[in-house]
Image (cartoon, rainbow, N blue to C red; front, side):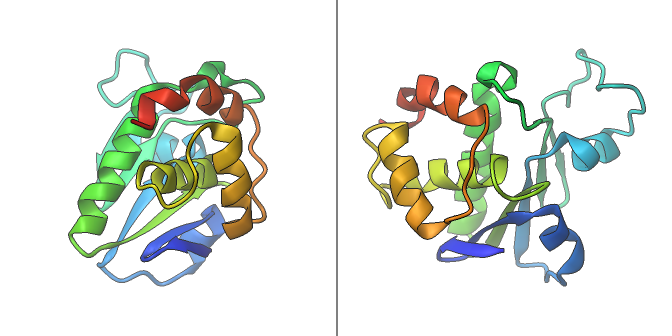
Length: 160
């Protein structure tokens, strides 16, 4: 678990499961397995696409994303990132600490952390590659998979 900005942390599922968090911690859970599956209670391959929480579920102090670590960008949706940034902004502005986590803490959760920093102008944000370069100085374990394709293609949606 690494603090990438004041009270904003990036980590893994193990960090989430093994740390004792007080009520000042809120969580962005960027993992279908096991978090989204557990929140919705589905047992098949995926949640029903008509379910109102198919992409995003909210539970106490958590936003839970139906997000896999895909080798391509085609399985990501802008709303996953938009709502994650909104959640982080809302709760960090209220003095809460945020842990953004995925399963391993190397692709999805640090990508959301990178995007958060870029939207706050805390790293250079001219394009994804520049931001990625700067972010890897803060979070050296960042090794994005297909999420980088998605963010490269959609960068201008987030950086105004």
